[in-house]
Every structure is written in C-alpha cells, then in structure tokens.
Image (tube, rainbow, N blue to C red; front, top):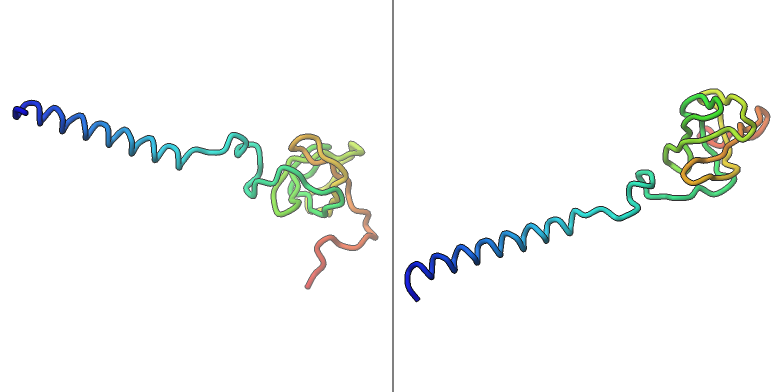
Amino acid sequence: MTGEQVIVLAIVVVVVILVAVGIGRGATRRRGANEDSFGAGGVPHVAIGTSGVAKTALVPEGVVLAAGEQWTATSTAGTRIEQGRPIRVVGQDGLTLLVEAVPSGAPSPHPES
C-alpha cells in the first residue's frame, strides 16, 4: 500500500465510525411513536370514579388534575365547574376526560391529613 492509499483508507474508516456513532445516538434518543400522545407519566386512560380537582374553570371545557396529571376535561352536564372544585371522572373521550363536580356534601377526594 502506498502512503496515499493509507490516508484514503484512514479517512474512510473515520467517516464510517462517525456515521455509526451518529446512528447509535439517534436510536437512543428516538421517542416512542405514541409518546407525545400521553401526559408526563405516559398514562393514556384514567379510571372512572377517579377523584380530582378543576385546575381551571370548566365552561364546559377546561383543565383538571386527575391521576397525578393535568388533563383536558369537559363537564358532562355542560355546566360550569369552578376552579378548585373537586371533580370525579365519569368517562373519557380520547385524551379528554368527562367529569362532573362532586356534590358539596360528598366526602372530599383529597382529605386533609
């Protein structure tokens, strides 16, 4: 092998190594196909009956905190649910929770310790 061939071969080896490292890094950073569809915990469903609280007023749509995550929610009765009011999950439509306000006399979903 001549000196020029050694240099060309070294350049080719370096390029191949850089490409392999780039592919390896890309594979480890690749997100799951459905990862963007879920909340921070990756939970796609919330059980019916789960307690929560209205983070914003629902008029009739807004944001609730349920199962430890914030969710878009709709009041099933189409009525306004005030911010801070306890809610209960009664259904789910995709990633939107269907909720109702917990009646005033009902036990608090988050009892004080």
